Length: 309
Length: 151
Image (tube, rainbow over all chains, first blue to last red; front, top):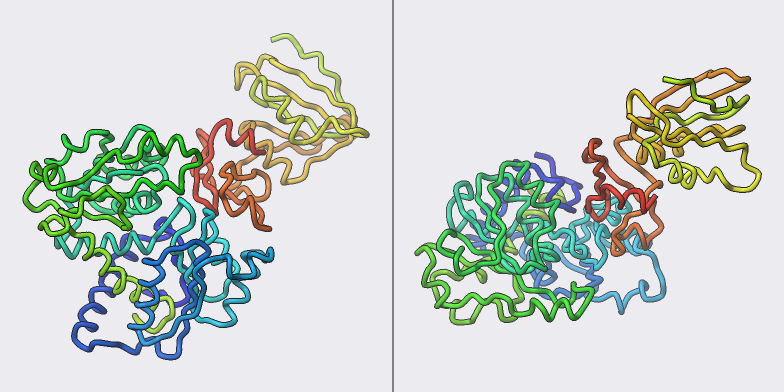
């Protein structure tokens, strides 16, 4: 499978085979790292991380992945320190940065920014989040985490909880899960329901989808609960946010009704959606999820650079 | 069915089979009322075998570009365009919704990059019946009145 020079913009661009190939490469890299400590597949290659919007976790994860592959990193972590503040267009920023680097990772507050960047750039562009649209690398690491934890994805009953309206991680994850034989429970306040067009698409692809506001009643059905933060910064109206703030909290008493093997995931950062007491329980999978970011992003960087595969 | 009493035009374009009531949108997006435009003849709510009722727009001295025809297809997917020269129909074709709609419709998502950067808005046709488009950039789907409102 030829990934050299390919852009990673949206889960919509992937086939199931693409996803499986990335996961297999990540798994192989994870084992290699365990065995050798550090790798040098990307020696001499430079990653540019263009974070027009702050995100410590995703940025550090990409940087760590590039360093672990033996490459190096340049970039910025907020638009305020760049020529964008002087009015430079996104296209010009990309055309400039590609002169300094071999692969670009971009996070941008506007939906579609990564697609535009990929059209402008000659080198591969990886989307690290564009507004409330897509976050494909998060989705791949989520799928990787699920597969590592359960040994499979087919046959699982999965609950997506929280901000299903603005949450790009759950949009992308739901689209990727549609490649598998899963049953989905979409649990959210009425105001934050999953967009209709995504639900329609899931159903068209044969996913059994249930919408509910009842977390407690749904918990016993689930093999996996994917929790998301209700993101204050995505609400156009503060009053709307206040109506739904703190709608759900996952704690040990709620999990008493869960299946023994239930796993809880969260793209992090969390605010109050998961009580810290859950961290020590066998249910917590969210820190393993953070760990998965590195091998999955190593796989994507290595494949798109053409130094792996 | 009684014969329609709509004046023939010597030169220009006749757009037929517009869904009844949609003629104002056709006139608006083709800017047919701008000063120095040709004579404009409109027939609305006309009986039609195909549509039940339909609108017809005739514009004198004006021929349509491909872009304009594509715009009409978004409002009136069954419309036919007749090119008239010297009182005769010299060309007749059905409008067709292309697979990609470029530079015609703006994205209704205010946070879409296509509304902020120098880039032509682009949509992929997801479904023709009912018409459903997906923004190439922000990936949001657009349908119904949202399409008409953003032409």
